[in-house]
Length: 254
Image (tube, rainbow, N blue to C red; front, side, top):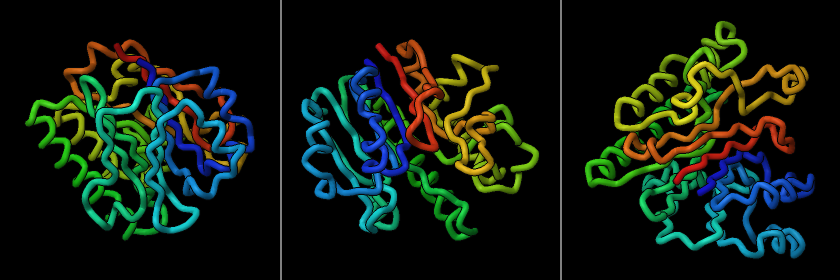
């Protein structure tokens, strides 16, 4: 099974850049998109026709042109659930959970903390509420895959300039420790398990020609339950794929 996650930074914008040609060629079984910034009714007929053959679950934000996630599947999931069950997060369209044979898949756009301390606190509360939910699911015997834009780089290897960014949201200690908490609660960072020393990034700022210089951050993860890790065959960071300030990441799992 092939699962691809991608923060596309605006669905209508990237469709205009022809990224669906790459999706067709990659042909994932599940495609998890974050920061769609659109509602399905805002797409025109030609754009909607690109999704023929897909089952699509939408969770747009209430605020127009902001946030939102969508999960595309070739086979209809066993069930779909939108949101975390907390209104303060769910109005921002950040989560879709789908059930597939053998696991639950979370498509998540984690909050960005760069607009001030209140948003950092909001982000940390989101991490805490999600982990509480996952703890209950693990206790009930569920296997889980968390994928999406975590908006945090975990270790120094995960960004080009760690020293300069220690006080920047996305690499502050109080954010990074939440990745440690997930790893201590039955999850593994699948990419880092497979490639402990590899340096690759999934996001580059649009300014300072950062992508051309590969001055980036690894913000887009697959966190999988420890019990699922033996089934993971590969994680591919598709860092040559353009169209967004993030690149797609693909999980291959039996």
